[in-house]
Image (cartoon, rainbow, N blue to C red):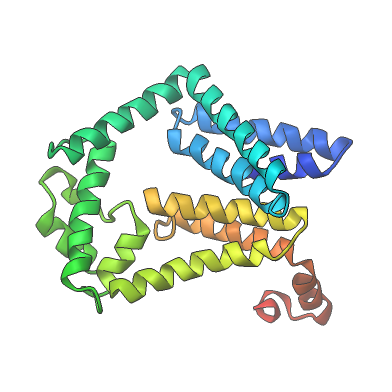
Length: 252
């Protein structure tokens, strides 16, 4: 999120602000590499900082948008080809997905995700209207999954997680909440809106491949940062609350 926001600032400013933003962007991107070369961080960076920014800014200029997305694709390909650790992670993930789809069960990152998706989807199909109840995934999941993933307390997919516990209406409600952040940022044509849009894209991506909206370590900071980005994109709301002396309570 830092790298995505810094990229937007660098593109839309000049002088010292651009220099500081580029420094923050390299720091944010480099942090992902230092953090064990997590592949999803780079995918999130390309999706949020690159695609999200380009789609938001060039939405009415189709040729330029196509060119921007092509550049992003080339950049992503360059990351894949130029970072052996990233390439190894992605290749490993692809192999794990393929083996899981072929029926192999193993204690591997993406194999576990496929198992979780399969069993959680079964939970949704069995009770599509009401779900199994809030907080029920742990009990139901441990009855269904193989032995080794029983220690997990979430299915690494928040759409299915909500669908299993609150039915299809719950999954749709969760999706509408996340997409409402997209829409609020989409309606703002300036660079602040582009930052909020990129952050919302990254938060949603994280939630559908991990547990981006329900984990105290990962999820709550992501949602807080998304809220900060949206609030900063609407400075008049914060300004009126401060001017009236109402503070955060008045802003809400």
